[in-house]
Length: 371
Image (tube, rainbow, N blue to C red; front, side, top):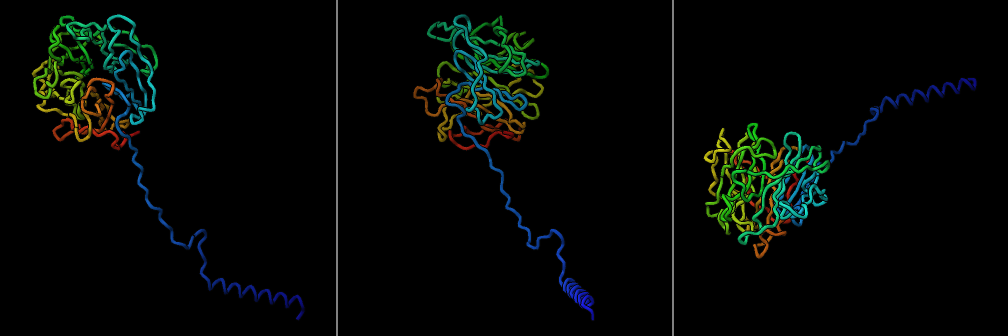
């Protein structure tokens, strides 16, 4: 056999043997790992938390949410500041923008209290209390009245605030503080804490109709006066800080602060408007017999009150913000030791709000949904 024939014959034999071996061994599918896959463990999402208080000081806190942004304010004494944040749980990381500075003299030059920010008819309105410091009969706040500013900017921390003057009932132009707004059935109403006359005997809650966000258009109506034992701690007797709350079905509640802010018993009471009722008819409001939010000795929360309400960024949760003292009175009372605190609340099966118990300082709480 010739040399090249021997080479060809050996090559064919080697090819045949290799083919036999290949047939005997099962082929692996392309890209398949023979090792069984390992399922990674499921890691639950981390719950972000915050704790109260939100700031080191902040009497009369107020919050309003517009889209995904919160605007916050509280009593500063001689000016009005607005905090802007997309996370109320991180309020302390935000600085305020000056919205208004009290003048050096005049009817609104002193004791600037309880500012509130409302978006009405496409504009922003800042309602506040102020006076000129006049003292009559030993009362240093005799001149206190309610005022309002207007801003057409989309963002209330920008633009120009225009003075729209004083809000008052011309027939009953007496001491007035803690003004707030109510929109109901297409109508505007102004609510505030005031006195029946010149005497400093007690504080009542009044309501009046409005023709626009800065003008009262009818006589005031008293819808609450302190009569119950838990409303009359301290002298004089106090109902103040009215705030409107509506449940998901549209039922209307007016939550207010009762007893003196200088006492540990300062807390929240509530009126309920009859379904289909007229806000200007006192008989259509029913007062709850017991406080709906009050001090917690176990949690070291005293004098919780002067609240407001807001919803979480995604709109799924209801929150209450309020001020409180961390210790029994001992001189704290209505001073700068009052700190802003917030907590989530729900509604009972009968539609009434359930605010629970004031949460202790430092307790971890889940942040509002959407933050």
